[in-house]
Image 1 (spheres, rainbow, N blue to C red):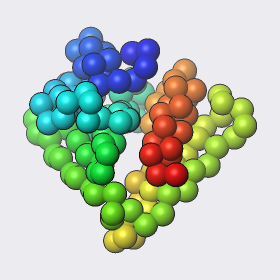
Image 2: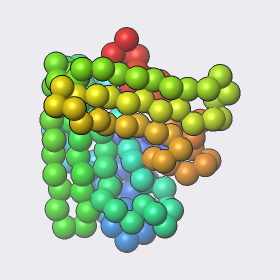
Image 3: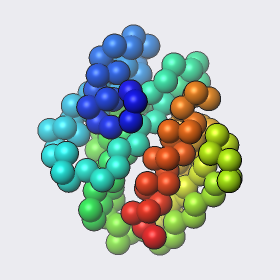
Amino acid sequence: MQYLELKDILSFAQNIAIEGNGNGHYIAATLIEDLYSEEEIKVVYPRHIFPREEYQKKSEILVFLDDKLCIVTADNKEYDVTIIKYQEIRKVNYKANRYEQDPAVLIIELSNGSEIILDSNQDCNVHWVFKYNSKIKQVFHLFK
């Protein structure tokens, strides 16, 4: 999964055998592939795809499009799709360190007061922090 794109997530999810995680990400990625074309997708941000004990929760993939965010949450049995229009975003806060190997955080505050937090330290394992930092920066550039 070199670039963390949808096709890479599909391929990776097929090959991992963790309870819930591999299947959940495969189900979520397949659904996203059915909903949107590659041209429509600006950034794909998977959460909890790498094997870690604390990732025994539902898989989640965030898809940033031109005017909305699609969040697909899935496990082996069911999936949930949430669409958030960018008009519902009140504030975006990007925190990073000048050293790319250190974690980055993006906090997206919605008009209803809830937050979506992208955190490279929490959303992946230590080996992928650099690539997740890059994804977080890509998402931030959508809102600047």
